[in-house]
Image (cartoon, rainbow, N blue to C red; front, side, top):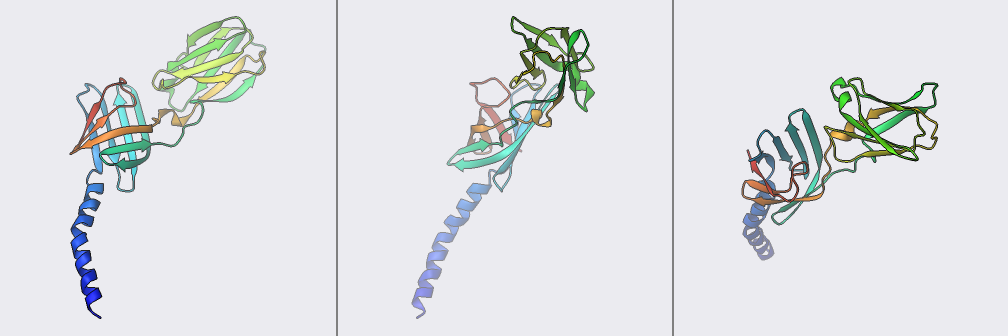
Length: 215
């Protein structure tokens, strides 16, 4: 009656080193990795044991963050993040006024970012472009408004497009969505080699492999 237990113990002892090695192999890459070889840019990842990651990027006045989950497949880490809202700006107010201009106002708790909004105004006949002033205002001559395009210089991933149903509206109040700073990771792949990760950077030149070293 004791032989099965003896055999089971021997099997467990035989497999245990391999199981421990597999566990270590899956967890030893977790930690913080910092971008190497790019002047004036601070950027990196933190990979956590619960298969989540955090990302940061800082260059001059531009700061970006990101987070999500990852899956390990061999020597590759496949990153995913939650989908962002459809637009980086939120239209809060649209109305007709007696003002002889078209006014686009952008507000945000951080007044330092208000002067960096790029705006394009599409009319039935033309497109006009301008940049916001220090208080977040863009002013055009009065004209029927078909579409408004907004994009921020600090976070220029994509334009936010707003079709305007009432062409007679001439005052538009927008706020900046707080998630504009978040970086999307849609299946990005980093390759693991020792204490180094190599692969694309979501905010730097495409087509180049960047190196992140574990600290």
